[in-house]
Length: 162
Image (cartoon, rainbow, N blue to C red; front, top):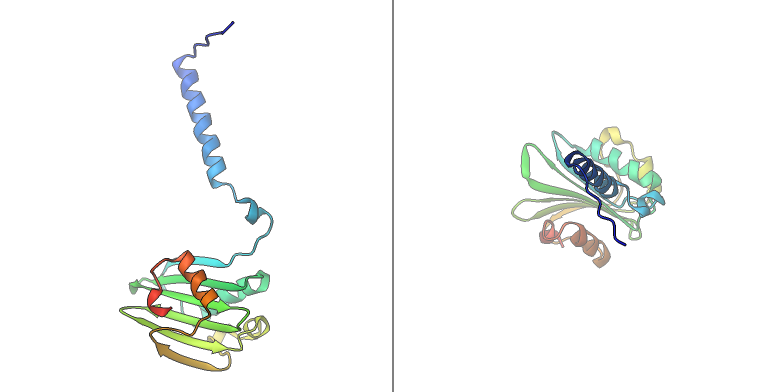
């Protein structure tokens, strides 16, 4: 036999509140990979008042200490040029570090020999001082894997650099 349960309007409201709270808990809970200590390989830094070389290197060092990524990237924009996205891309296997700014085209800087040890040893107070520096405009010589990694996280945003 089927029972018919009749809830008061107050009880229905309580059921809805509990259901919404449960849904929010599920949606905002860390993913199982984050709970298992999976490294953070992509960071969207958002809009910053200022984010000079010193701060960029400190952030990179923070993730390099604990990370086991094959490719690591962080993006940001600064308030003075909010329409210009910037990207720090570290191809760990190729030991190449890129800093890329995209306006109407891409401007980039590249350091080769960017090992984890070299990045962690670099003094952030004077910015990036890694060996084998060069700069350019247009397409970088980043590996296809690094370019695909960026495209998967920021479709079309940095295409002029890859």
